[in-house]
Length: 83
Image (cartoon, rainbow, N blue to C red):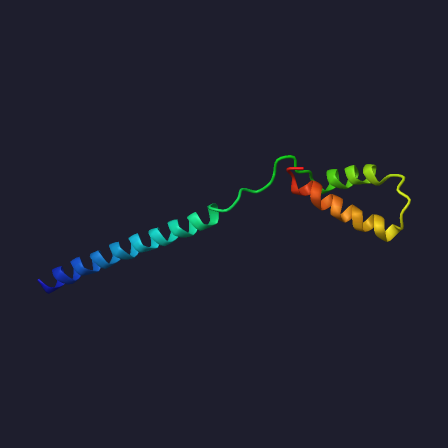
């Protein structure tokens, strides 16, 4: 009789533990997916972005440091997409 009661109690505790874990997992998943979607439309690879930016900067009469700074910014923007 005691073994039966303890077995039922253990089964109940295990059921509550599984339900609690599933709810926690669901809450975590909701937090992860609730944000803004990634901006991928129109995004380029790093190589494509670098080539496009080089074409835009071609013939610029600026210092090398200035061009490098603008190139980095340009590449970052083109890789970000939605532009």
